[in-house]
Amino acid sequence: MADDVTLPGTGAVIVTDDVGGGRQIQLVKLDGGANGASAPVVSGAQASANSLPVVGPNDEFVTVTVDVTRPADTTAYAVDDCISNSTSAPTTFTISNAAKASGGSGLITDMTVLSNNDPLAALQGEIFLFDSAVISPNDNAAFQVSDADARKCIGKIPFMLEDIGNNEFFHAQGINIGFTCVGSADLRFLLRAKNTYVPASGEVFTFRLKIQRLT
Image (cartoon, rainbow, N blue to C red; front, top):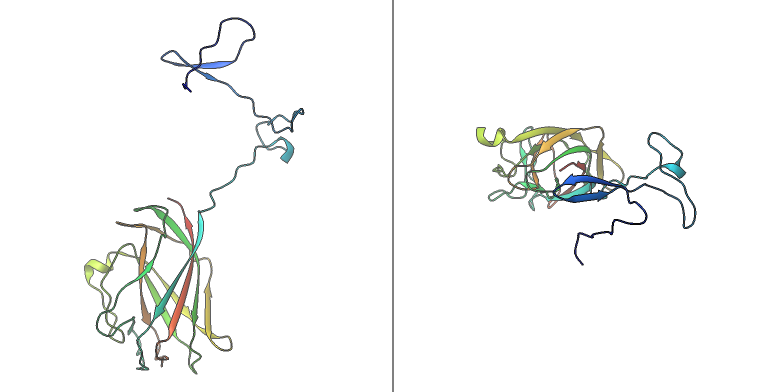
């Protein structure tokens, strides 16, 4: 069916707005009433019956989960050692779809950390966030990144795990780190130990980041 409809110039008058080029936009009055009833929507603050509800996007607030599995050894970490997934070929960890689209922006609001280990001395550490991929140091090596990679850092979140029975847990609130991804919709991160820590072989750290995706 064609988009444009020509009405005869007789009978009832339809209120329109002339937008040029021979085009008319029909004006519509908002009404929230049921069939056969009227409940006009009025501008300004009104009771719900006379208001137009606005529903926000359901993909704006997300929780992204990332598991970090360290190597199958129990070599102790020293202060400022890197915690990674390999002693020879480590990778950075990816926070997938932190933004809605490549080059998009957002806000990290909360983070939880869970370890499946239950050590005598809990891990104290830091998560370094980057807007694009960086090169990770080897596991248990000194935490060092190049100047070029350091410029990609958008923030740091310290954490201190605590014993909750069979495992260790931490929750950070009110983080409010804003970011804009570069070259993708993802963020990356690296981990650094801030105390002497004896890990479990193949220990798994689970990071859950709560993100408000803006674009």
